[in-house]
Image (cartoon, rainbow, N blue to C red; front, side, top):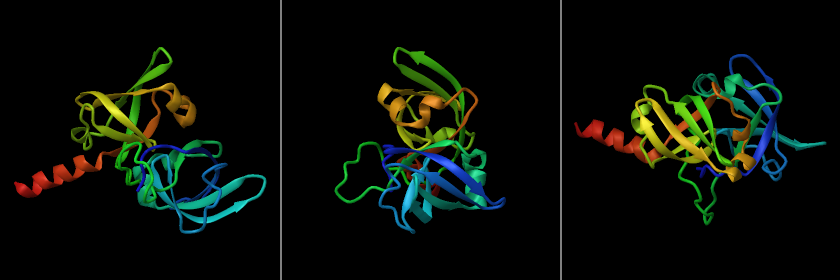
Length: 199
């Protein structure tokens, strides 16, 4: 379980494989102390560390299945791609964002980016099947970052990024037309399921 509070920005060093893939990520902070079997949220995708090491840089390898590739932006990654990283929540840690499972629901498209002083307002298009789970003032994880939804109109919704978030995550590099991983609020998911069963 994660909180959507990014603690490091990693860089994809290489990708091997065609069907499922192995991704190598260099991670200066998160990589320290990792062991095989550990979990890391990589742009919001919970991946299991299969190898790790320290050379000139701290790195780890993780596998992504065909299902993960189909559902997430990992299929677009290449050497040099920068990704948001977070280690799992531990008992006693502060829950600074919201509960994030690391189970990405799909991919949203950045429809527009508008400067608002030092902040940026991001407009996104959600997949049709996820639009109903997004509500004003609700939470959403985008590329692993816990954000508050400002407004919703059909499939389109908006979030604001403050200077700290822009400085500490890869969102400062995001451009109009980019695809981003989206995980809906787990509470919205369970409420929807409850209503389906109830009726």
